[in-house]
Image (cartoon, rainbow, N blue to C red; front, side, top):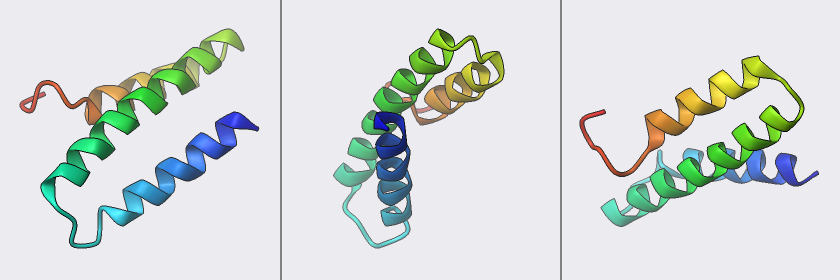
Length: 70
């Protein structure tokens, strides 16, 4: 149930990125996405679902807020 809430929250904050928001919001979204995808990776690894692990790691790297050029 908690994973569904995280996924819905991610959908909501990512759709809000389409609106005219300040730059700080996008930084917050990148950090929240990294943490959320990290948790989802951990949960998928606990269930031995390697496909989801790869997808969530890739998404976490895509949204990571530390290296802008990655």
